[in-house]
Length: 389
Image 1 (cartoon, one colour):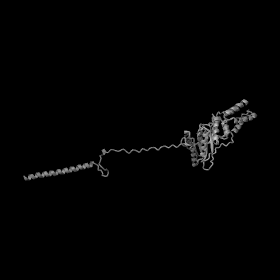
Image 2: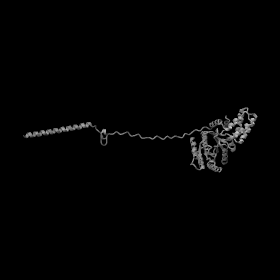
Image 3: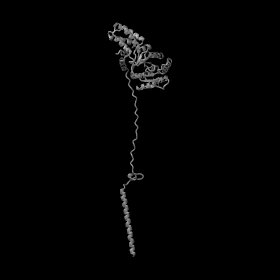
């Protein structure tokens, strides 16, 4: 029976060996199948824990940086002023179409069928009311009566020639109407001091004068020495900006003489041709006016001599304007007149009267509200204009 025991033991051992072989083979086969199902990953491709593909959340691309647009810098538009020559041609046409008292008086005289004493009296009255003044009216009437007594008015063309000649004599084409813009010393600018009461368009005239000079090719600096009127400096600076001209200004209530000096000093340092100084237009008392304008002029002349003193007059104010003109002429050495508002509502005779009363020529005239409605005065053009030619 011993042999049977050992047979049983041998069978069990063989069965154990076969089972081990089968388990080993199956394990190896399982690992091979798993290896084939999973792609091989290089250790250098991914650092850290492996994440299953379905667990990877795609990231959005980075947002584009917001670029702020560059600010648009709008350069101020510099205007090109109208040439002085064409200005006067345009203003003369406007004058010829206006219905001013002087033109009416001359027209009535020429159209009369018979010139008797009553016609002459009416003629003289109309001339005086046109602000021609008593003296010039008497001279013109006597000259016309003498000429027309010889030839009469049978020939209207001849009568008009006589009128033109006598009127031109009164306007006086021999006066020097050019602006003195020649500096007294090399390196100094010419200095133009502009005076006048408020309401005559003084500050506007300074701005328009700057346009006239720029149109002539001159460099200009403006001085806002009217520091008693809050809007004056701002108004003047606006005029300057439009033609590329700098304005020297200060705070309201500042010393006018100091502002005027700074303007001339800047003009000298920058080598400009002309400095135009706008002054206050107060006319409370002659003494106060004299002190103020006198100080402004004295302080300016510490830097450069004053080349021109222009008095701005409103042509529509008549005798009141003449009173103002006389006061200013007593205070400062006026060298020229600027007549503003010499349009259809004006009485053209003031041109002759103001020259006679002050002994200085009308150098510039304004015939409208336009920016280029200021022009050098042309005596012959003025006479032709009021005669409707």
